[in-house]
Length: 190
Image (cartoon, rainbow, N blue to C red; front, side):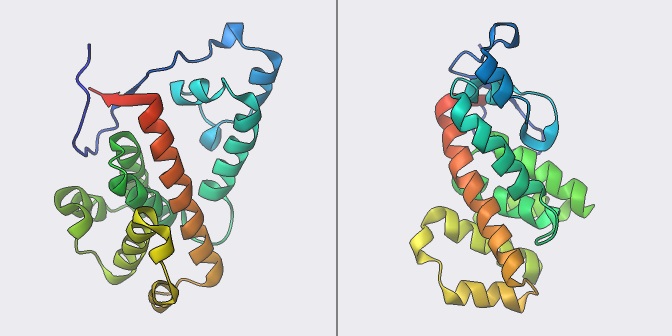
């Protein structure tokens, strides 16, 4: 058996499901229809194949995920990934943190932000805009009712308009939910 990973890593670990994924050759028409749209429109992962056990939910989840994370306009992709990374840090989702760290570094063409986050965790000191985004994602993921007008003002001071702030809320909330689901359904392993 593989060793479960408990520490953040920049290398995306393998994810082993606890629930047997749907086998494509044996999938129902409803499952196949739900699998037509995948997260980021790439390969069908074991995680998505596990979610395919509930095709009605998956039919809604994947298009919503793609719109939140890859939609045009609003917050930049790197900043959306930073929001998702903040949620993944709070939720200790090793797999998602690695994925979003890689995507953030790739999109921003800068590994220093994710290096600092993995070195210092929630206490990392970042440039003001990234700090405001990360702090907001942490706070929203830890206890949503504690976010307030001061948090919105801080984002605005760093140049985020209302549409961008909403995108940050959505990307952070999407992964606050997805992290918890991933924890229940499987484990990151090396």
